[in-house]
Length: 73
Image (tube, rainbow, N blue to C red; front, side, top):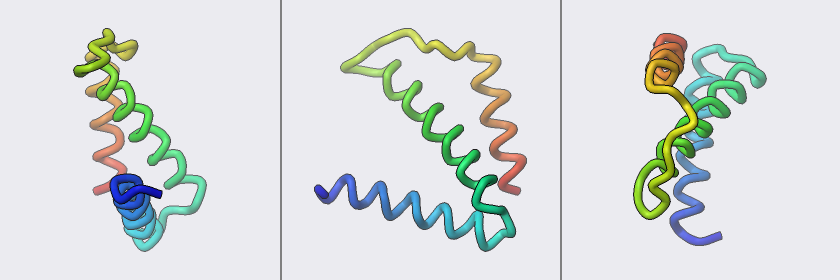
């Protein structure tokens, strides 16, 4: 696994540990990570070199991010 990939995996596991330590169940933090990865992938595809229009409406993206943030507080 290249350095960049291993850094991403380590960040992901660190985030999982934070969620678990805060009392989230395995299913809950898998759901949160899935949402975040989906939004990150959609965001990355809307930037160069892909420059594809986002399939997620702006209002929905904002609501999803607010929902994720409120669950983490």
